[in-house]
Length: 370
Ligand SMILES: NC(=O)C1=CN([C@@H]2O[C@H](COP(=O)(O)OP(=O)(O)OC[C@H]3O[C@@H](n4cnc5c(N)ncnc54)[C@H](O)[C@@H]3O)[C@@H](O)[C@H]2O)C=CC1
Ligand SMILES: CC(=O)C(=O)O
Ligand SMILES: [Mg+2]
Image (cartoon, rainbow, N blue to C red; front, side, top):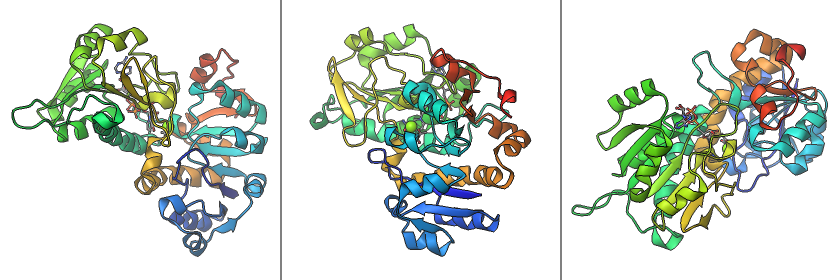
């Protein structure tokens, strides 16, 4: 198979979908890898490193899309990439379809085979291709929150850890999954009073056992959230219903219950966001203010730390990419129920129910396309 690795073109997205060592592994399995010139530079990988491991460097991105049987990306295709997607071509990347009707329609129209990292799912419900990026985004969410709590960036002017004699910041983490736990660890490590809210009681029980003393857990209800808003400094949105649009846990009227300069970091923005007032922002212009509340809604947070993120992402995606390349998508998916969960759209048909229902579009059972 020919595998194409285009350069990411989303704003300030410096990750790449394959590190040089991955090329070697695909070569060893009999596949050819085309890497766009300069695609690894943002993550610290030169063209020479890719060539040394057996890749062909291609200057013209159109040529990569035309020749590749499988395109490996990091972020979802953006408008300028829509016309490049081809019928029957496998695209293996984050799609987050439920957040974008335009993208969903473009992929349906292209008739490509869209295998989404974020819905590959293990039997226990965990999402192996999302985990490392959720770890990065969660840890970053606390860091970014701390930064935007500073006065000069619009925040309340509160130091996360306080000092002796002055209390620390109060941090609410909505969702105690991978993002939430990592956010809470860093926030608590900085000394903040941290509360994790979730609707999964066994998870709260576990977190209560393992988290540091300055982290407490709370069952997530609208009432519980409202009670905390007047004393909260930083809210981190980290809920997920896999494949579906995130639920709006902070509604517009709730902003009035917060103090001016409160900061909200909506990590769940890639699934549409869990605050009603969230809209996607970029690393170039990450925040905006509504009702004196600072909103940070960057949809590709890991893109800011590409060295760490590229290695973390490619550690987990490569074994699946090898399976797809070796067997073709139908056989690879038939052999691996985890990977099968990743198929969202194939041959113009939506086969992931939550994506179809997000936009009231037609749903086709996956067996009909396999
Ligand atoms: N913005 C970015 O750059 C990135 C965003 N993400 C996104 O972050 C989100 C969270 O991802 P993970 O932590 O990996 O998911 P996860 O599945 O590990 O955790 C989600 C948690 O939300 C909880 N939850 C669901 N409904 C809830 C409610 N009403 N109240 C409180 N908790 C609720 C679940 O019980 C679960 O514990 C996803 O949308 C993911 O795509 C992940 C990485 C990067
Ligand atoms: C998960 C995701 O959307 C990202 O890493 O950008
Ligand atoms: Mg994202």
